[in-house]
Image (cartoon, rainbow, N blue to C red; front, side):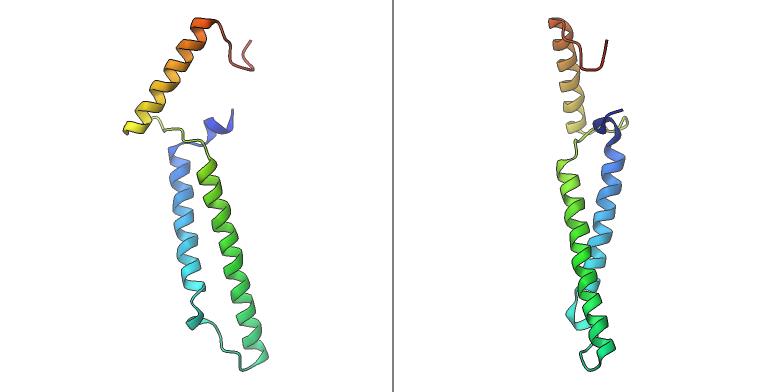
Length: 109
């Protein structure tokens, strides 16, 4: 099974939901008005870790955005959108062309 076969519309939707959740968490955590004050050493430490947590959230958000941007878009079986129809038609056309010229996909004997 290839990566293209694994990433379908449902997984893309789940990743997008995860991205929205991380963004909401980042917005809550990154508000400087909510950070601890700098009056005591424990408050300074808490503020430091809060900022570090925000930075780590941004790294996760960036990784998820990259994954979504670079992932192949494979429509799920029940997807009836115009894009899904175009992808299915293109795959069928490509398969017919390969068959017509006698090409066999890699890994198929």
